[in-house]
Length: 215
Image 1: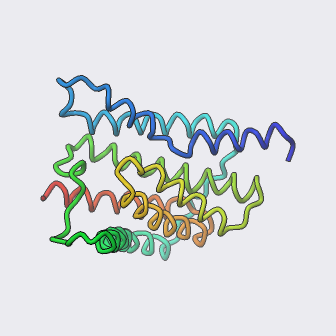
Image 2: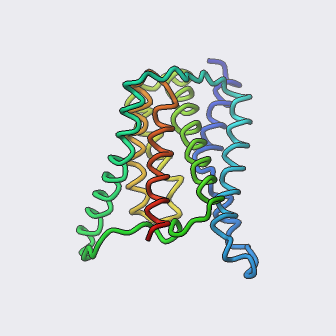
């Protein structure tokens, strides 16, 4: 690999390691009159930034997207969604136990309670973009271009995926690292079919959002 291509790959990794940072910073400058729409503004900004970074990255690093989804993997993807939620609940409960906090019940993060229809769609769009970035793009860079072993890609991409949720606290970061690992494994063992983690991730978010709307 020549030096310019190496720089392109490293630049893409740096640019996409925390794509929602700018929208998170921008929410601090939202006028008080629009504060009730801050979550929608944040989601819309995150979708825009992730889509922009994906488009630019695709011009620097070629993406080979596989959409050949077999029935078996479709079933696995759908079945993985509730398991991802259960894993995040277990990780959160473990952190609370270690911190000496009494668990009084299960609840959805307050940011995702009573999310509007627009917010619902933006959240699913963001999940799709995250999969294209952290699973598809990063696998191409880390494994194909930089020659890292599969386990290196799984660890690094999962930590980066968790880092993208650090805004919500250490507990959420660790929850997302754990589910990011599962999503990376689904992507790899399906033969790089990006639809597998996309279905699992979007369905996971949809279940949580529906849960929040009913809360």
